[in-house]
Length: 175
Image 1 (tube, rainbow, N blue to C red):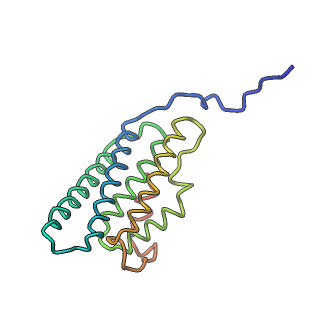
Image 2 (cartoon, one colour):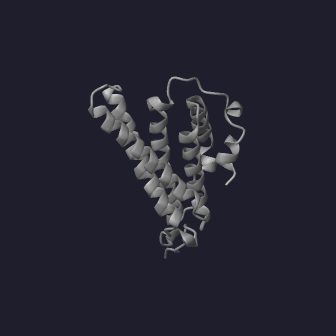
Image 3 (cartoon, rainbow, N blue to C red):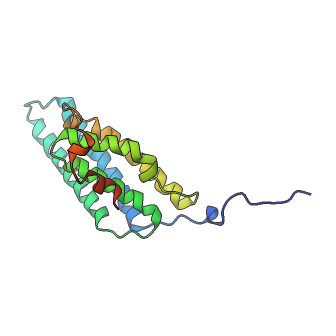
């Protein structure tokens, strides 16, 4: 006779727990995607003097404002579950990157995120909630990679990580 021994922890079969942060973070992902598309459209027209350019520039500004509003929406929400902490860290990092005045500084923050992704930007555990949050974070990582490759963040060397901003570690790691 075979003995049935469970190999998953008891929490492995719990239902997915949605929180206000996880719902707001999905909005961040969609607005970040729209922002990237709008910036790529500007790159495609090569900042032409065509009258259509003004409409495309307005679309890009609107996409930027929508992204900033979505990120601000995540910042003001309380952390309900420990799995939400990496979502808040990623939102703070993206906000710091788009708000950074020097493109080299944003690229340095991106490099730090790449180095600390698995330790600071992943939810631990095997629960459905942790797997869901990790999926959101991996998608966000791909979008941040696409965002940093935009001409908006290009053409400048990467600053030294410590010279970028004395608050860089605070923005990313102290949530």
